[in-house]
Length: 282
Ligand code: GLU
Image (cartoon, rainbow, N blue to C red):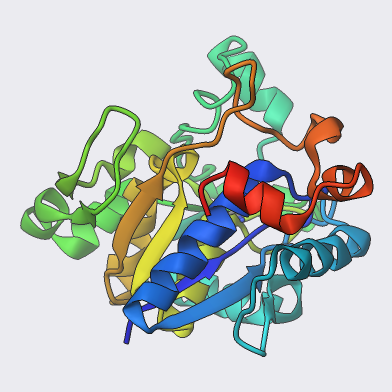
């Protein structure tokens, strides 16, 4: 059965871009006579706030959306993600990384944001790791792309792909080759949270039976590494439908930092949900 989701992170109030994304996914589920799930992706303890989660329900209700009764809040399920990382650890697919962000920046010479994420530092030498563990230093778990390739085998690695029903940033659609190497040895469990976005999201997509991932094109690149994680666990492959990002009158995409366009602010200014829906094409 067709199933899709809206999976916001409660790091601020929702804006028009979120409304567009949620309505796009909701409409697709309705058209297909399928399921629509709301998931709260709140594993980042520094940026997520309960008040913003309340704001999500308030704004989506105001928009006239409905969703399946049970809402999964990721921070309630950290054990699930830890269990998945442990599974990978037993299979030699992850390694501990004690390096700090500053250490990375120092070694790569202040690479721009993004490039700094696509690193493949490799495991620490054994004696160094033992010492860091003894000293109680916090560590992240990183996926080893080399180990992942060995586990899958070259042929499966080379044929890893996804099906795009929407469009990537360069208009990509149809069957697309996955290039997980673009993400580097991605962090699957953060130092501070014990979980991280890619793993938690694909874990939940599988658990919740999501057949279609409908989300903004800003997450298109994330699909490459997410497909690899799915295949390492033998989780089913969903179909992807990345949608365009809504832009404001100045041609720039809406972003959380621009407080003026939150749905809450629009509502307080007297905009009705009907007006907003019409403005963004629903
Ligand atoms: N939680 C992510 C965000 O708010 C969305 C994740 C996804 O749709 O895969 O950007």
